[in-house]
Image (cartoon, rainbow over all chains, first blue to last red; front, side, top):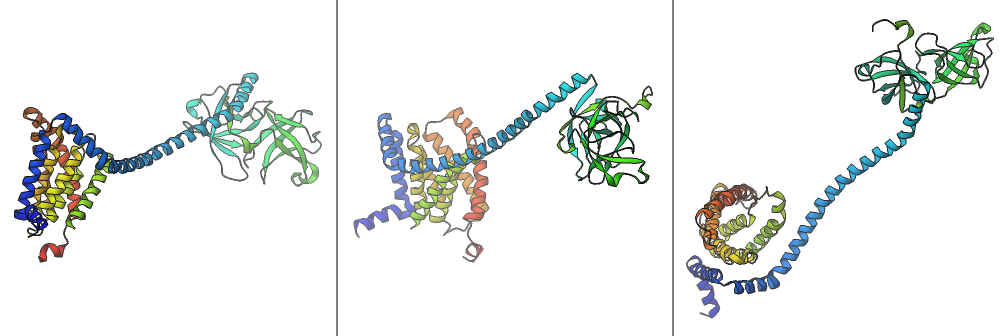
Length: 275
Length: 161
């Protein structure tokens, strides 16, 4: 029997009882070591055996940490981007709001600013939902405008929001006045999204004349800026030359409206009545 | 060959213990994947492999705890040896039974470790209740998964032999 066979036999005989005794004795020796000897054992083991393995494990840990950190940074990045977008919008909104507030102060009217929270997806009419409702004292038939001019009226009022009927809505009719000749006309929408004003055929109205609300009808007070006459409209002129139609360009482009003012006033025929 | 296989399995457990366990630990409660691996290896390859695997793993852990040098090695080599006596080649055990053996082995390990590292009296019971038991429950849950899905013997191997 060679010495190797003897060793194998010693370590494996009786289910490794020899090995067990050897291991327990070794562990006992380790447990009984004094502090400096333990430190030596520790140093030798760390520098020769465990350092390379630990380095690989540390790298693995670092990789996992980087993945985790990456996720956190992505989340943070999204949050900061949202904040940035919000701030950019706020900066862009600021001059418009300032302009509108200056207009409100200058006109002396009781105005309430509203944000447009939804828009009619139709191509020809401009109806909006604004974030003011009955709780903000906004009721139906209140003029809606911007600093540039009239854009419509409130058609329906709910608790916290209202529906605004734009000037180009097919059901919208506004009594207007030519600023120069003081002739009354009727502003209405024309298929295709245009605004059209009808005057008596012999009225002194020409291209370049500006139109304001006449105050008739009770909904819009007199003098609100509406738009400018830009062209004749032959198709809209009725037979017999009783009325003539003119194309109007509104002072406020309805497609570029983001904030509006609601003029807090009740139509003239309900003034004094309890609503 | 058995030593190499068991060594590979234990190294894998060591890597997971150092990496994944940090992520899945609940507060201070950490599962001990090394114990799961040691019990699995010991039961698969026998008491001698279990003994030396336990000694190796224990020594590696002891290197980082100078004050208790040898305690982990002693506890793990005894656990490896004892569970190795339930050699799968001799006794066929179901995964549920293995989980039970793991529970006993875990408790045995912590008792040996505490006593050999000089923890006695109230501190011993405190460590047993506050550290050993929560970690043991977590380890048993993971051990059950490992025994059922990773190292469970095939049906034919279990019942035809």
